[in-house]
Amino acid sequence: MSPPAPAIIVEVERCGAPFLRFGYHRNRMRVIAGTYRSRLLQAPRGLISRPTSDRLRETLFNVLAPRMEGAVFADLYAGSGAVGIEALSRGAKHAFFAEKAPAAVAAIRANLAALQIRSGFHVEARGVAAALRQAAAPFWDLVFLDPPYEDAEAYLSTLTGLGRPAAGLLAPGAMVIAEHQRRTSLAESYGGLQRIRVLEQGDAALSFYVPAS
Image (cartoon, rainbow, N blue to C red; front, side):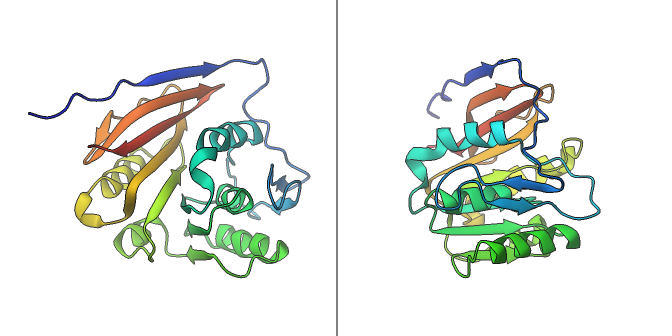
């Protein structure tokens, strides 16, 4: 008999501030906390992108804080790399960036260079599908994915790929977090991943998944 599915916690934050507050300085964002706090980050040039807002990023890392020190963090659909760089700033030992848009890959590399981060990262420039097929060791403790909101297939294929135990991508006790539109419902489970929490903020939501026990 399968164990009962864990209860889902749904949290809503309404503070009156608009969600699309990117923390831009012209075409730049900033690191929020940690070693590289307040350092500016370059956004991909020539792309119409939707970076994770400062406020949502701060909320995400407040939740992940107990897991962050020494973690291996995967930033899938990484864009500028701001989320993975935030993880490094807050104590992750390794960040894995997966992105295939050339302008975004260039921005990731430029941001790492500007912060003088020379080790403890891997950039997979062939995109997420390649990362799921040939992920570089070590296994991932924390995975954040933020595909284009309208790309339902990207959510399905990525979460399903991560949820395949045979894929061997996730470390024991790993957590996977998907950013998505609040009005878009993701499934409660994908393969071996079970959703345990939904945090809603403005027009966005974060769904938290863990391997089913």
